[in-house]
Length: 257
Image 1 (cartoon, rainbow, N blue to C red):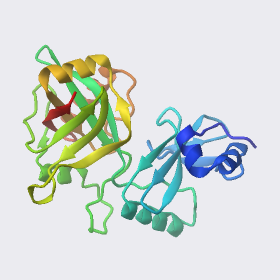
Image 2 (cartoon, one colour; image 1 turned 30 degrees about the vertical axis):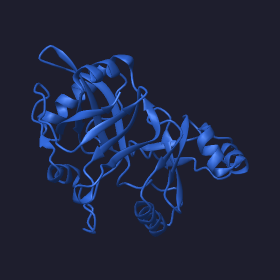
Image 3 (tube, helix red, strand yellow; image 1 turned 90 degrees about the horizontal axis):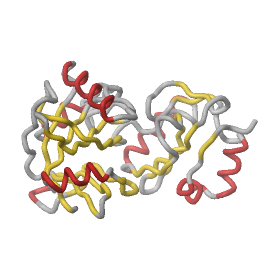
């Protein structure tokens, strides 16, 4: 039975027309799946579903998401992450299991009102638990890892967070490219998060960023914020996460324009 499936041009180009048509015809598409974004069940026969292709250096994994959670897209991830996901999927005996849970970070831009002034902000939320590398465990260590990098606990969104030195937000030609962190041994900055394709930001966000030359970066564990369609709802979600002790933050200088 044909599926209610979205296959973006980028994903089609990567997997080929023949495979894309087989997916759309329902030959290689599961009817039921776990959304790679919100982790709740989906049904490609009953609701619009996005194909999301996670690509490493040598490996690619095709996953599925509610179209309301994620558009069909390609997401670059570290090869070791992808290999770990493949081992997990094979151990489950299912080829349509969840996408890799580490290092797949969702980033949302929005304006945050603090003391009567609008500040450009990025909200970072992983699609799943971030496990401490090499631990072999399953406990989410996202906030602990960020605290070790210098992010501060954020008990309230009513105060501007402290500057995290060495980090920056890269904006070019009005598009968001990356969040940069200090390189090893004080070398050139490296990408902590990098957009597979540059993300367009609103003119108001860009204007606020160019004015302040600073971006506020908030981060919360998977499931804390969610996909919020409006900035007021995003602020409400941030306030809830802060009150629950599930939010860290840092101010970062703007790199680019």
